[in-house]
Image (cartoon, rainbow, N blue to C red; front, side, top):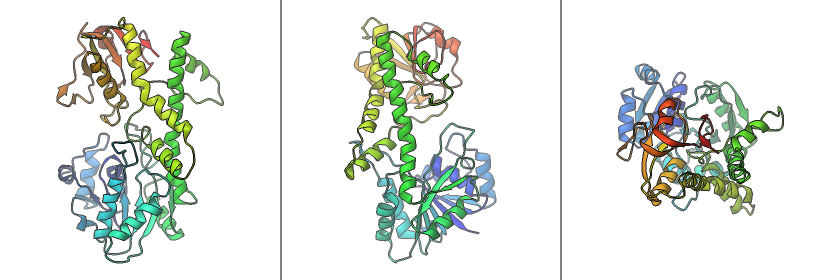
Length: 404
């Protein structure tokens, strides 16, 4: 059976492992010993990933997790599925990809197809991954290289690894063909593009499109406030047009591992080749500043005096029905409220605990104001409305509340 090793066992890597495990002998490599130990017991650490399926693959000897790079030595295919965050100064951080390349280069003992699923700027496969693996290799193994950028959306149940269209391209035609053969075993719709750079750029542009349009509606929310009208009502009215309009809604900002980050990868790379990215930069700025605009709205509702006020943030994660706190604008709002002397609490029945602080109950009149940052599906609306005399709903989805 074809041996596949997947570097990184987070949301992307583990879901690929499970889908590929029906057809291939899969080794999941991760540096985190605790995660690996639990995976080998059949316990998934990723919400929405069924442990029952994982245990079934382990029982059939189709999957095992490891922290030992030597276990990938005889792989026929290696998939890189590691994070690509930002550095402290908000520049692309390829340190996880570098580490993956080191593991691959030092341990592979035969030629393999190496596929990158990690999101990065155009040229990463050709100019970073391939040279790095060759640099770490003790022998010239003539690996083949391809790209197929991940497109997962945590929390969704309608789209998964099988039914989400998958872009792919290899550095050579042979690599392209082998990549098609691999993914066709567990993906229904494959879309070949002309080069790895096109696939890399497409992934970045998908999320830049979302960032820009979210920024547009967030900026419009600030304009609408000056007009004294509801941005949400205006947008819903515009959305009645059956063509030429796509509805986005304003909110507290953007978070997660894609929308706040991918446009920066695109903009930084564009600038490095002499192109401008003023539109993208402005969109990033608008969305980053939204927590400050919401702070201003909250302040006006409390007569411009926030000192010693009790405010509850409803929903800490970056999107509904997930526990992921990466880049969450709720945390930015929390920090800004505390700077104003606010006594901040949070209510989130999915996150439950943040830095040792437990989610607070929605007790009647417990707060001066409750602000809905993210609306999880299990939010009790009646309890929310009783928790404070003033409710500000950033999601625009709850009737009878102050909103954008």
